[in-house]
Amino acid sequence: MTALAFDVGGTKLAASTVGDNGIPLAPLSVPTPTTGVWDAAATLLRHAAGDRAITTVGIASAGPIDTTAGTVAPVNIAEWATGFALVDAVQTLFPAARIRLVGDGAAAALAEHRHGAGRGTADLLSVVLSTGIGGGLVLNGRIAPGRSGNAGHIGHMTSAYGVDQCACGATGCIETVASGPATVRWARSHGWAGDDAMALCADAAAGNRTAATALERAGTALGQILASAAALTDVGLVVVGGGFAQAGPPLWRPMLAAAARYGRLSFLRDLRIVPAELGPLGTLTGAGVLAIEP
Image (cartoon, rainbow, N blue to C red; front, side, top):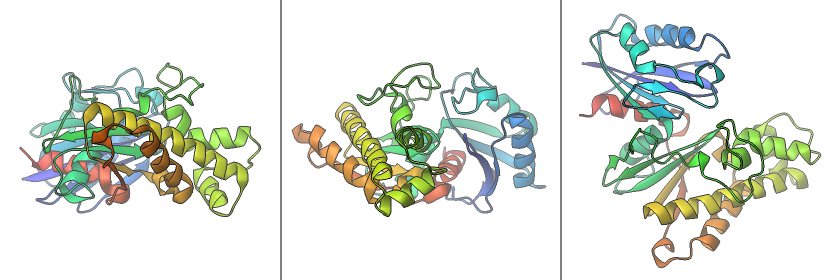
């Protein structure tokens, strides 16, 4: 059996064959184009598969997704935002393969549970901070997908700090407050002149007041949302990953403080919020685990 993992994100597309444990063996990636997304994805998948007979494909996609219909409608991929039949499209490339689809947050949760910061726990919430904010749940050792596959999609919980309209059409989603691009936008609107989230984090660490305030605002908003999500799901562990999670203490200190301040119920007092361990390959690893597990 040759299994393939495929990760669809707003910033990049990634694919790899995987080992018996689901871990990617030879990851390939390309930037997500603004147009011709499927053409780029199909080329990537063919290169990743090579001349191997692919028998199963695990797909992790930015959402929303619909696991029943096999469609994805990522808010950060404009060309697919109204819906794209991704499972059918992948099936045309690998007609004999079993195709399985989950949200990228759920894939990250599965990967961290099996191979990362969640090893040995039964329940966890995974949060991915990047271009957007994704999330997923593992309950009793298994992905909890929900009715349509979107359970744990924490990026579209409403934040008290949120005043901007989200790409999803709602106003105030945490994604408009604490994703990398949203935090950069807020900093720029308050006089910061840097280029991107990486520069923002560097400036905050160097003592730039506006950059530090932007990250403090994002971290505080995230902490409130994480406390609320933990109260709803009764998980004892939140694993936070994604590129923007690498912002360091200027983001993490206010996030942990806010989670403690708002998580006042007795069952929340031992809530742990920890960095993801699997780094940029976390979501692709989750897709790989999905591909190889029954």
